[in-house]
Amino acid sequence: MAMTSFEVVKRAIHFQNPDRLPMRFDSLGINDTHSVATNAIGTGDHTKRQTYDEWHCLWVRSEVSNMGQVGGNPLGDWEALKTYRWPDPEDPAYYQGMAGRFAGSEGKYVMTSIFMLLFERMHSLRGMGNVLTELYTDRGRMAFLADRIVAFDLAVIRNIGERFPGRIHGFSFTDDWGTELATFISPKMWCDFFQPRYARIFDTAHAQGWDVWMHSCGRVNEIIEPLIEIGLDSINLQQPRALGIVEIGRRFAGSICFESLCDIQATLPFKGREGIRQEARLLLEHWATPQGGFVLSDYGDGAAIGVPLWKKEAMLEAFREFDRWGR
Image 1: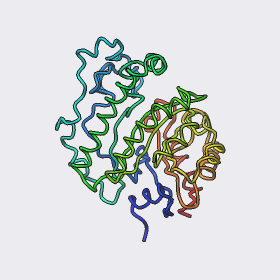
Image 2 (image 1 turned 135 degrees about the vertical axis):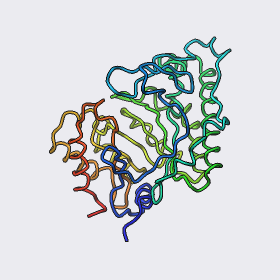
Image 3 (image 1 turned 90 degrees about the vertical axis):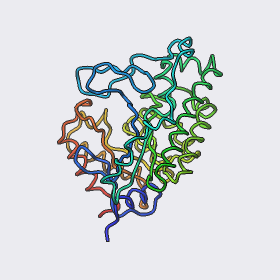
C-alpha cells in the first residue's frame, strides 16, 4: 500500500525511507502538506500598494504582483518605543478561524508558521542598517528587541499547540540570512547572539511534537551546522547554485532534510528544459540520501522571478524522473 502524504513527508524529514519524493507544489496543484495559519497579516493587504502588517511595519509594492518589501520601520527611531504597541500573542482574534482551516488536511502533513520569525522581524521593526550596526555598537538594545520578538514567538507556538494538540506536524518560518557571498554577520556573532534564541524557539516547537522547517535565502553555508546542532529538521534553500550544490551535499547531506528546487535566480529564469533537468538530477544526487532527506518545493510567484508555468512543469517532470525513492 502506498504511503500517505503525511508518511512520505515525515519519513523524508527523518530519513526513514519514504516511498516517493515528497512535494509542495501548489502552482501545479500538488502538495503533500497542508497549512493551518493564524490570522497574522504578514505582508499586509495585497490589494494595496502600501499597507501595514500586525507589527505596524509599512509594506510597499510595485505595479508587478509580488510580496513587496518593508518601506517603513516603526522603531526606526528608538523614541517611538515609548508609544509603540507590541502585537499581543494572547489575543483570541489572532487564532480565530484556525480550526476551520484543517478542512482538507486528511492524510496530509499539517503545518503552521510564523512569518519573519526573528532576524527579519528585527530589521523590519528597526531597519536593516540599524540592526547590523547596533549588533556591534548597542548589543543590549538589540538583545531587548530580539527577546521581545522571541517571547511573542514562544507564546504563539504554545497557544497553537494548546488549541490543537496532536493535529499539527510541522512549524515553518522565514529568516533570510545571506547575501550572495556570505551571511549578513559573522558566523561567530550569529552563534553568540542568535543560536541560543533560535534554540529556545526550536525546543518549544519540538515540545509540541512538531518538526521545525526554516526558509533562508542567500549563501548561508556557515550557519547550517549550528542550526543542525540546535535541532532544525528541514531547511528551505532556493538558491542552490549560490550555496554550491556539491559543497552543501558533501557537508550536510544526511544531517538535515533539504526543501529545495532548481535555483530561482541562476537556473529557472534563464535555463531551458535540459538545464533544469540536469540541476534536478544534481540536487537529488548530492542533497538526498537513499533513506530520504529531500522535499521538492516551489517558488509560488513565478511571474515575479520571470519563470513561466512550462518551466515549473519541466522541473516537476525532471524531479520525478530522478526520484530516488519512487522508482
